[in-house]
Image (cartoon, rainbow, N blue to C red; front, top):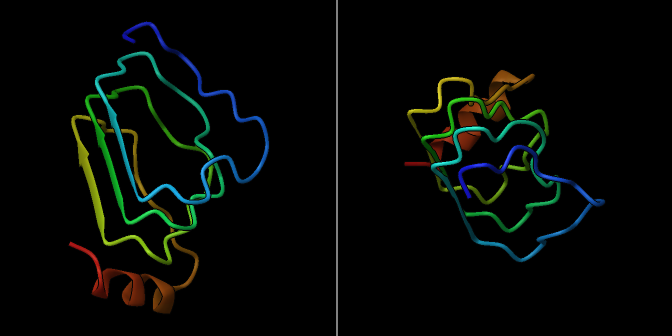
Length: 91
């Protein structure tokens, strides 16, 4: 879907049981991702140069976070202790 531009978030909790999420090769995709990804174990974003997720992602179960050729994607932490504890279980 090379022309996909925006994820239309319909509410909270769209994918409460999603374990692995791969977003790959969407050159025009921007905006928010689903908020309630509480079961997410792996998040991989590749070749999405315009994607800058505005939505905080729950990282409690995340074990793998990989970003390739997507320079606007990042993670923000308000709490240094939370950041350290999250990194301990990740690749």
